[in-house]
Structure formats: C-alpha cells, structure tokens
Amino acid sequence: MSLFDLTGKTAIITGSSRGIGKAIAEQMAEQGARVVISSRKPGPCQDVADQLNTKHGDGTAIAIPANISSKDDLKNLAEKTRAEFGQIDILVCNAASNP
Image 1 (cartoon, rainbow, N blue to C red):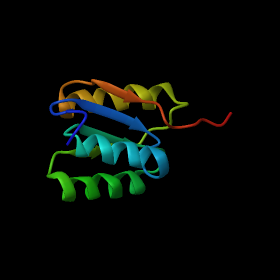
Image 2 (image 1 turned 45 degrees about the vertical axis):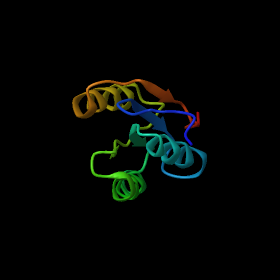
Image 3 (image 1 turned 120 degrees about the vertical axis):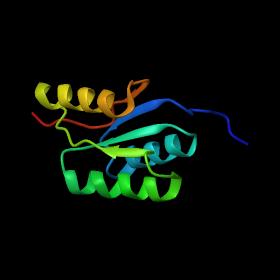
Image 4 (image 1 turned 180 degrees about the vertical axis):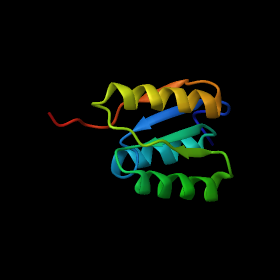
C-alpha cells in the first residue's frame, strides 16, 4: 500500500548524493516522482541517479551538481531541471552551506 502517489511530479533534492537526502530521493522515486540528484560533487550525484534509473527505469533520475551557496549554480539547477522534466513540483532543501 502506498500513502503517496507522486507520478508525474518532479522533485529536486539538494544534498541527495548520500545520507538523508539520498533516502528522500529513493523514496520519492519509489512513489513515482522524477528526481533531480544534486550536491557539489558530480560523480556521487551521477552514481545515485544511475542507481535510481536502474531500479525504477530510465528517466527516473538525473544528476545536476550544484553548490547551494552559488546563485549561478542554483539558476542552472532550476533551468536544467525544467529543460529535462518540464516543471518543478517539489523542492527539498537538504543541503547545508558553509560560510
């Protein structure tokens, strides 16, 4: 039984290459969402996206690295998400920023 149906929804999860953010991304994909995996390092982002695509089907996840303390990175994150998935329905702000 599923409590949530996120089919057709797009979620950006910052800090989602590991830990709590990764778990959130996994559960959203499990509920049918398309997910954007984002953190500062491209390799770990792509690894998680690949895992989700293998488990839930191609096109479930994409990796868009971004440093949340950079306005340019955030703009790129939103623009690439819209270009790939057409919309942004859910935003989970899980990443932390160091001064």
